[in-house]
Image 1 (cartoon, each protein chain N blue to C red):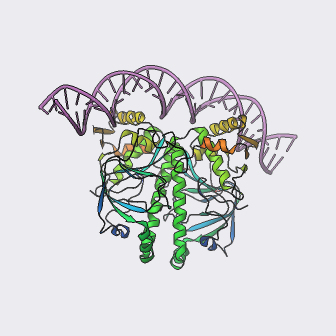
Image 2: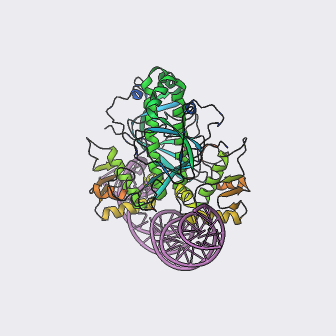
Image 3: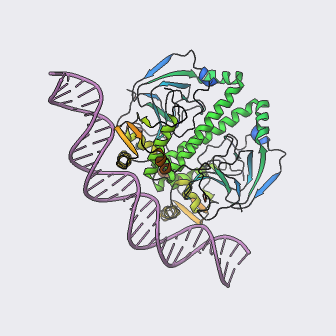
Length: 245
Length: 245
DNA sequence: CGAGAATTTGAAACCCATCAATGACGGTGG
DNA sequence: CCACCGTCATTGATGGGTTTCAAATTCTCG
């Protein structure tokens, strides 16, 4: 299973593409991290980048009083820590037991100088992250609880896609609290909304960590995809005719 | 006046540093854009990048029903559209009349090949954006209305800083609705919270678009800065002891 | 099988949104 | 110069979606 996503909302960069970045990790040893183990803290000096071999990480920022915002989840195949400043922007913690490979950033700079395409790849990665982050801003700032959950499910399904089609059966290794902190809700609201979607038949919950999307189209509509891809007419005429002059 | 910020929450990359990216715009003509004029729409093919010479832009995503999330504001000195995909991720619209210079992306690729440092600069820019975006996620997902407004004010002040110190008097060219769509609130709530801060003496409002920060320290505390810089003890012990293993 | 954790479910409260009306500008034209 | 009018900001009253608090139930795993 080779599913990849840094931020859940991120576009997949064709998992089978032979990433030159990924080749950096070729000879590296695989380390392991226990469930709930910390890979690094927000603010730590960013010495390494990592490739997730298996398992799932949560990335988060936290306020002094404990309020937490999960900025994304990491899955196998994903690369972490590549484009950031000299310090990590968030804490990385294992949702499940994780196997990963480590690569020193000092050597990255050398590699970047050698391989010209690598630089573009890194930039593309950062742009994908940015795209996901902005979509998340729309979600956190303007979407309802149902829309957030629907979007979350649809996005996960899209990235676990097996051969073009989004997966119908997805598993969610993270807790309800994790999902809540990712979507700007509470654990209880996540649970309630999932329950509602289940009652309405849009999803099934074989177990609390396995979801079946029975009506993907309906969920996609609920998710309220933004942007240029929506083929609806009259998209821009709503809030008071903001036409170019 | 040489204030620069792409996303309001962004760290300033030393305004006086002679950016090699900025030199690209050297001989370019200055175009103008009327107030509320559209520079480009979300989803448009990203042919150009822009340097803002004067004025203010808002960048936003919109849902089919008109709900809007402003992902950031752009001010003079800032460069726009540099690191993105082949299509713009958001709509760019003038808050005030704007003067700007345009540079074709096709030529950017050539310039990137020539100047090695440029590539790093572009990446650094993307990382700054990403950092701001993640801070915004924490704000949108977990902060109260007062905290959001306080953070907004403090952040603006920090970027209009004149000689190290954050400015005490800031002007907000954008409307209350713009601020609301940036902070995930309503116009009315923005207005009410500003009123409250004014009554409490933390700020003054000479006009509705000019704010004086009377008690910056207090505002900073309200803003609830996240992360590693807070010198508080007991930061990580709150929500159930998430220590490494 | 048992104990603690995670999830679900219920009831009440609250923050912010919504709806509505008034007030303050700012630009325009008489 | 000032009256006018549309837009934006402010302020008030009400309502609702989500949170909070609490308890029951299910799940996990030693």
